[in-house]
Amino acid sequence: MRPRECFQTLVAVRFDELDPLRHVNNAVYLAWLEQAAIDHAERAGWSEERQRELGGVFIARRHEIDYLQPATQHDVLLVTTWVDSLTGARAIRSFEIARVTAECAIAIPFAGRLIPAGDFSPASRANAVLRARTEWAFVDVTTGRPRRIPTECIADFVFTDDTAGPESAAVGRENP
Image (cartoon, rainbow, N blue to C red):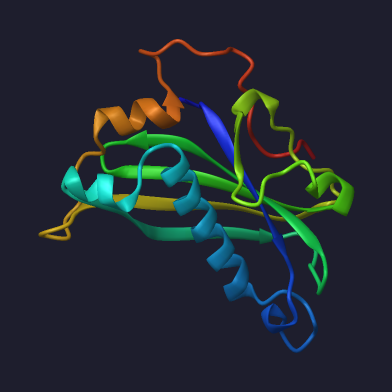
């Protein structure tokens, strides 16, 4: 599987998001990741309402977060997310948060944007703040039990062996 597209959005670090060391609080990063995933799904046509119409919703099961360097007040951060895989009832989504300049931020709409996965390049070590992966489960809204992810959802987020796609859709972590 290869991601079809990435979703990017900006956040500006505010004072109330800092911990006692004046770094972004870990819980704040998690909230940004979850919101980026929700915004990506909505932008791709998979709002919570549409998911519920098909009888299920995605819930987070596990987070893996690598904190690479702290972000501080007034930093402008680019949050990027993409879906790595959707199989059975399980989805794996990746994230990167990187520091950007104000000039770079001007190019990104306030509500975020979708870009082809092949157009995304991981941030440099100097700019990368965080990299993460989240495992999501698609669960039945009535029973709370896992259920298969609808095939049309899979087709909207990833290229599979059954679907054609650009061979250069290389999305992933920066090489060490």
